[in-house]
Amino acid sequence: MPLGETIVALASPPGESAIALIRVSGPLCEHLAQQVFALTSSPRERYATLGYYRGLSGEQIDQVVYLLYPQETSFTGEPMLEIFPHGNPLIVQLLMEDLVARGCRFAEPGEFTRTAFVAGKIDLAQAEAVADLIHARSSKALRNAKKQLSGALGKAVNEFSESLLEAIAWTEAYIDFPEEDLPEEDVQRLLKRIEDLASTLETLAQTSRYRRLLNEGVQSIIVGAPNAGKSSFLNALLGEERALVSDIPGTTRDFISERIMAGPYCINIVDTAGLHDESSGLERLGIEKTLEKMKSADFFLVVIDSANALPDLPEEAWHLFKPTNTLVVENKTDLEGSAICSTFLPDCPHVRISVKTGEGLNAFRETLAKTLESDCIIPDSDTLVVNTRHATALREAKAALESAAQHLRQGLSQELMACELREALEALGAIVGKVDNEAILDKLFGEFCIGK
Ligand SMILES: Nc1nc2c(ncn2[C@@H]2O[C@H](COP(=O)(O)OP(=O)(O)OP(=O)(O)O)[C@@H](O)[C@H]2O)c(=O)[nH]1
Ligand SMILES: [Mg+2]
Image (cartoon, rainbow, N blue to C red; front, side, top):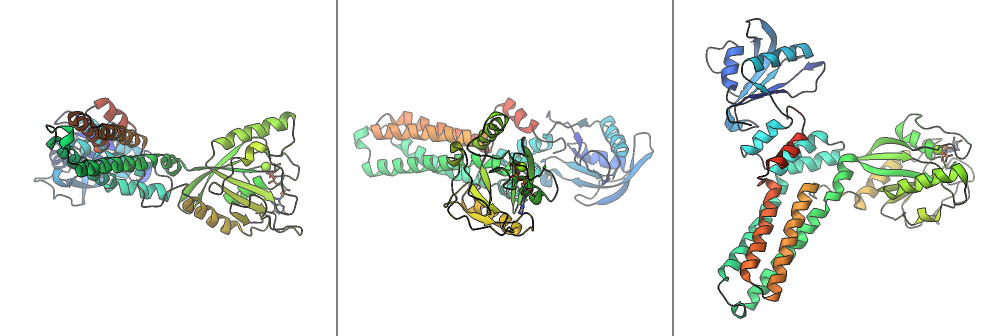
């Protein structure tokens, strides 16, 4: 944003609400507060004050609460004014138009956070965490965003950078030494440091695959033989008759997707057409669609009728079930013939339920949350989860480190090695914000909401 501009945006959702929030950031804030609230001196900073907002024509638009933040303690690093009017869209519109008429301009999406980043109030990873925090759909995702917002990723990156700087200092100190004069012990120590760091960076980069699971939910699929009670099970989990249920095998033809919470996890759950080994025609098509969908699933809920013979599932399905990604749901325990099905996928966890009586459904939710946690479908709360941009930067740094290690092993030029190490340092820097490319910043902050 050009220096000297003052931006304004509605920070609360549009529409009717008890109270709305209009945020203003920039040099005009203090002057605006004095003008619109007809004050003779500057308002007390960071102090919630009740006042009448007067428009340019002098009429009172609304009675509001306002707060003025000095640049040292504001979110953006510039003076800020927050105005809380009644949440009527018309009042909000009048206030915003008045602020624009007084010299403000409407903010772009993410511009408040971008201003905070440019002012050095937060690093880039923290800025991204602001968006993550707003979009988080499960308490796990929320926890991860909070952790990143507190600067945990920036701290880790700084530690990596420190370690790299030491390696660079060592390399540069020996630049004029012939290879045979390098102390072997130091060379081995440096090599180990570089290799360890490369592997740490790779481990961190790999956490980016958890991100989709955290932010969009675990893609789970209910599969099993026709009539096992898959749709009834989905309905029971949702607490509503979402899917059609009947005693005729082959009732479900199309996918039905819904979202549930299991503990801190958000689970996208899909009900599918019954699977069995022998089939033809339309039914075969349904089964093929299910098998295709199964390939992209993170987690399988295999529902079986515990009062009947164990099902024959298509060959392709068996390969996908693993103890870490599959929970066997033994349904219909209310029926007389129900028996424990321990020989069916014996390595996978089992839960016994009756959709009809509701028995075992709570235990199912608990087992599901535990299986997701213990089997690392999602890491524990202490693990930092990076996004794709971070993962790319981490892998760039890792590639440069590997190449530096190669040079060191082969006794090649130390200058070249220092150069590779510096490249790694630069790649790491991009994670927290040494990004010179405006286009990247535009894209990054463009994904934020307006007012944030
Ligand atoms: N006794 C008993 N019957 C159940 C239970 N769960 C489901 N059923 C019955 O089993 C039959 C099949 O249920 P669905 O939920 O349609 O089964 P499905 O697996 O979705 O079947 P398809 O869509 O045809 O593959 C229905 O008559 C249900 O009422 C249960 O726990 N106990
Ligand atoms: Mg069904």
